[in-house]
Length: 316
Ligand code: UDH
Image 1 (cartoon, rainbow, N blue to C red):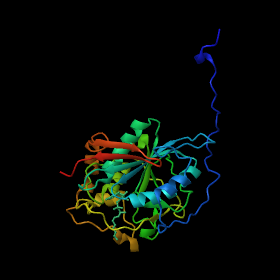
Image 2 (cartoon, helix red, strand yellow; image 1 turned 90 degrees about the vertical axis):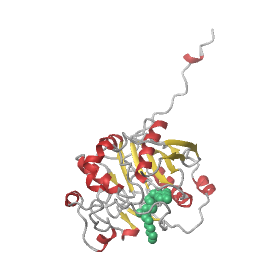
Image 3 (cartoon, protein in one colour; image 1 turned 60 degrees about the horizontal axis):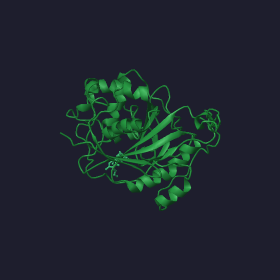
Image 4 (cartoon, rainbow, N blue to C red; image 1 turned 180 degrees about the horizontal axis):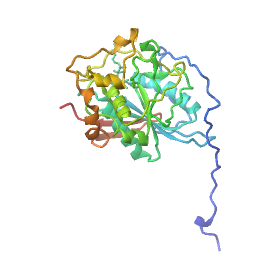
């Protein structure tokens, strides 16, 4: 009798060794510029190994983590092309298994970066429940060194510590903006990110407070490795500074003292009306990943990324 098809041994997948802790093909310092035109077709041609939706798995080893890279987005197609051009090859050389999620805020109401990041966390997990590391990256930030590994560790990680726009220094000790990463349990331990910061600023300080209040510490790369170029741009419409963004309570300074020196003025000491940031301890329990409300309007798998267009509402 012919053998039943199910009984036949299938082609066995080769068992790949674990990916090395220090990927061998890294090149170190990179030349990053934003002047040459960057058509998406070119970026696609340069990245044939990237699968639909911006997914990638190393062909020669088994990574320890599966990384969802989440980008808050609206009207920045030009920046996204540079980001994809630079980041795909870097992430590949870092031997990551990853997916890229662009969380696109629908409509023209005030932008809300942190809420979009919460959406990205939930939607990435809906697509692949094996994601266990979440890297949140602004679309205009490109690392200048591929030794800045986009991985999660035993503490929340801040990657973008030395941006060109801040003179390649950390602007203040509690700065957690730009590019950061948390594993799933770290993210859930702080109830995710705040949903109530509409407009520019403050949400990253709130996230820093959440992490401190949960008893965790920020881990950072070496200052020579954590360098970033930011694509120069003007302030977007509908992302005006949030009047409640900053801090005024002396308590905050215990958590996050300012660094003195020339860059201290970049984020100004706040008048007393900027109160939101003082309340993280109270708000983080009720406002976060457990309370985020939104409606997905479209999920579209592009060759180099997954676009998720979402209605996140508007400020009260
Ligand atoms: N973002 C968008 N669209 C927007 C607003 C923000 O995609 O309309 C995303 C994007 O990923 C961006 C991130 O949110 O990188 C952070 O917003 P931002 O780039 O506006 O913040 P940043 O602090 O710049 O980088 C503030 C305005 C600086 C104006 C300087 C003028 N010289």
